[in-house]
View 1 (cartoon, rainbow, N blue to C red):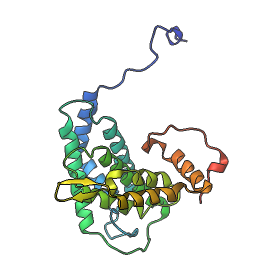
View 2: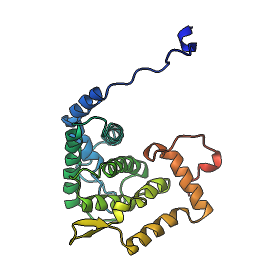
View 3: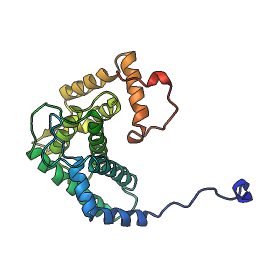
View 4: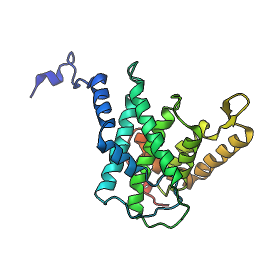
Length: 242
């Protein structure tokens, strides 16, 4: 055994990868066709009322890989945001790509509520969309974001959440910016008493009863990494589905 592991004067931690190396990888990914293809797959259901399989639907092998890749890249991007002065252009490139993709899909939305995508497949897209949304909200100080587009994206996602996604809904409803109304005269955005009341009512629906609070807690265990929570052991009674 390595006695160094028990030496209090020595560190047991592996040195972290430099921020510069992280950004080099980040920039390379954003230039790749892999990223462009993945974001197009992961956001293809954005703004749609239902889950429709179209003629150009990717294979079942591509969908989970693309969605997982996008979700993890958003987590990675969020982890290195603001770490180095002068690296904002990389994030701006990412935001512009996401923005353009969302605009394109919003223009091609459909209103059918028919569901022809299995629930397990839906979860892949929901995880990816939520990761993208959370990243955009974290980067809202960047002046490239269209607030109206962000609101459309957020509340479209809300309409497609299911049981187990309560923490995602709680996160979205907790964002004051999504309930702010543009003030044309002052070129600003602010919340009104009406929008604040709406926000509070929606949040209350998620936790105004013990059963709902228990379900929210269960959802938080499932999605802790997206909400800054720490993983902890489950109890069997927390593995509820309704």
